[in-house]
Length: 417
Image (tube, rainbow, N blue to C red; front, side, top):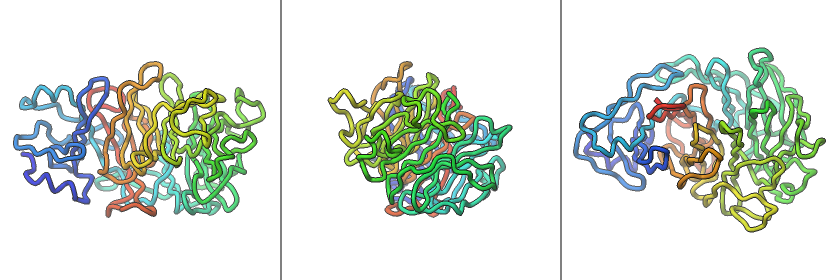
C-alpha cells in the first residue's frame, strides 16, 4: 500500500528513499518515475507532494546482480491507462562515504575508476560487492596533486588499448599549473601536457577519449576570461591530443592542441552515436550551457554567454540560469543527453533528433533528492552512474555522502530494463 505519511518526504534527509514523478519529453512522452531499491512510498510530484490513496501500481524492483540492469517489474493490472505513457527509473546506491568524487571511467571488467578531488585518491568501485553495495578499493593516492578550491585530482580516462597497455590518464592541479599525466595503476604519473592555467577556481579538468582515438582535455580560464579568447593560451579551451600529449592530427592549427575555444569551465564531455561531441559549460556569470562542440569553433566566453547574435560565436544547444544548473558530467544514452548539475541539484535530460538538434524541452530528474551532482558516465551495461558532490564547501551532506548512484530506465534499449 502507499505510505499515508508521504508528506514527510519533503523534509526528510533520506533523499535516497523517494519515488518521484517528473515531467518527461522522451520519445514515448509521458512521465518518469524514480524508484529507489529501498523505497516503500509510491510517488512524489516535482515541486509538490502527490498524495495517493490507492494501491501502488508498481512493486519494488527485483534484486539485481551487480553490473547488470535490475529486472524492473511491469505495471500491474491495477495500473491506469496513463501508466503506459510512463517510464520508470530505478535508482540504486552503489557506493557511499566518498569525498567529492570528480572523475569516473570504466575498466574492461565493468568496474569504475573514480577520482576524489580533495584527497587525491584513485578509487576502484566494483566489480565485487561489499554487502549491499559495490566494493570500494583505494588504488593509490597521488602525492603530486595540490588540492584547493575546485582544483585537485580531477578527470580520469582509461586508454582505449587498456587491455594491452594498462594505461590511465589523469588531470590534476599542482602549485603552479594544471596538467595531464599518464600512468599504470599504482605507478608514478608521467606528465604529458603541462602549463595549463591554474587558479583557486575554474580549472576545467575533464578527460575523455573520442571515437577518433584521441584524448580530449577540458580546461578552465582560471578566472581570467581573456585566456579563453587567446589562441596561445591553453586556458578556456577543449584540447585534442595524442596519448603522448602532442597535438592530434587534424587539429585546427597543426602545431596546437586547441580543438575549440571561448570556454569558461568545461567539466563534462560525451559523444553520441553520430560522433557529435556534447560539452557542459559552467561557472559563467549568469548562465550555464550545454554545447555541441565543432572543430575550430569559438563558444563566446567571455564576450558572450548563452545565446548571442554575433555570428563569430557558436550558440549553445541550450542554456539555463546558474541556480538551475552549473552542470559538470555529461553522458549520452541513445538520443538522450544527460548532464549532472551542482547548483541545480538535478540531472537535466534532453532529447535530441538524429541530427543532434533539441527535441522538446529539457526536463529535470532527481531534483533536490540527492543534493549536488557532479560526475556522470554511461556504464558499459547501458546504465548511468552519477556521483554526488556534497562533501564540499557550501553543500549539505547526507550521512552517506558522497555517493555513487546507478540509474536504469525501463522500456527497453540501452540503459533500460
